[in-house]
Image (tube, protein in one colour):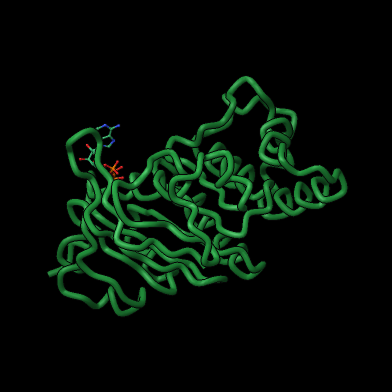
Length: 235
Ligand code: ATP
């Protein structure tokens, strides 16, 4: 279980997160929504150790991980699929997947995971020898998720996985998130597609200018007036 406990994060003197707390229970999908600049990416970057909170702590299964360097946190089976995907564009699909598993010593485990990723995304299997820079935007997003899965994470965090992706791929991405949850992997999801992400989420948080202003079950937040007005364009 992942627990963020009253963290404050700043860029220089400029505060980005204030007293943010959240819990992600094992085997669930937790969604974070908020307007541009609300601090969603900052929160994910703090969890993986790219940023260190000024105060407050992040715990994984009861152990404090905030303050540890990012490479040590990565070993604790938390993977981030970053916004903008972060693929190696000169490398093939297969090579990018292999890089996702660089910390896994067992070749049998790597082969099994790769087979699972190709089963989730047959389109990647067809294109395994293609250089990733020439994939479509949607295909690159599938590859970024696949690469995140190759490390065998206990918690998979995704920053805006549907951004710039055409609708048929978005459908597949959300279906796959459901399949990943079924496999026992916990998901922390930042999404601009608030309607779909709340529908999918077991629990959700709304961030506004660096603070959690609302939290609850996904279905309940979908009925909330503020959410309907601010994110769903409904009266
Ligand atoms: P978006 O949906 O637009 O990606 P977000 O909710 O992910 O937004 P963040 O990227 O976390 O928001 O940004 C939160 C605040 O911190 C913003 O005001 C942003 O300008 C600021 N910020 C983000 N990165 C930096 C940085 N490297 N240096 C200074 N300020 C930053």
